Length: 115
Image 1 (cartoon, rainbow, N blue to C red):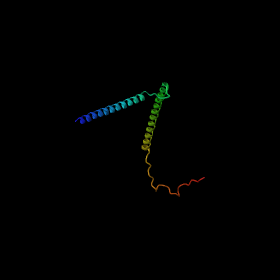
Image 2 (cartoon, rainbow, N blue to C red; image 1 turned 180 degrees about the vertical axis):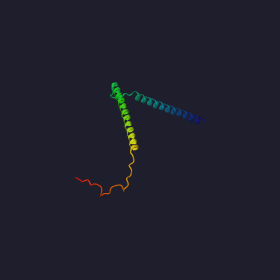
Image 3 (tube, rainbow, N blue to C red; image 1 turned 120 degrees about the vertical axis):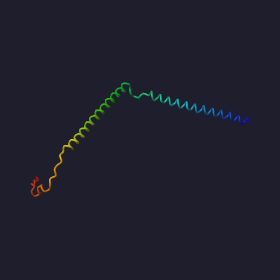
Image 4 (cartoon, one colour; image 1 turned 30 degrees about the horizontal axis):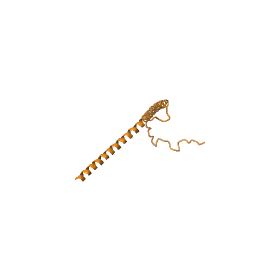
C-alpha cells in the first residue's frame, strides 16, 4: 500500500512539473509573439526621414489622381467609339443589288490604259 502511495505522489509531482513546464512554454511563446508584434509596429523605414515620407505621400496622391484622369479619358474614348460604330452602322444605306443584265458587258466597258 505504501508503494502505491509513493507512485501516486511521484505521478502527481511529475504531472505538476509537466503542467508548469507547458504553462511556462506557453507564456514564453506569448511573450516572444508580443515582442515581435511590438517590433513590427514600432519599426521605422530605414533611410527615410519624416520629410521624405511626406513627399512620397504627396507624390503617390498625385500619381493616383493622374491614373484616375487617364481612366476617365479612356472611358470617353470608348464611349466615342461605341457611338461612332452605332451611328455608322445605322446610317449606311443598303446598296441595291444591280442585276447582271443591267451591267455593261466586258467588251462594252472602257479600258483604262496602263502607263
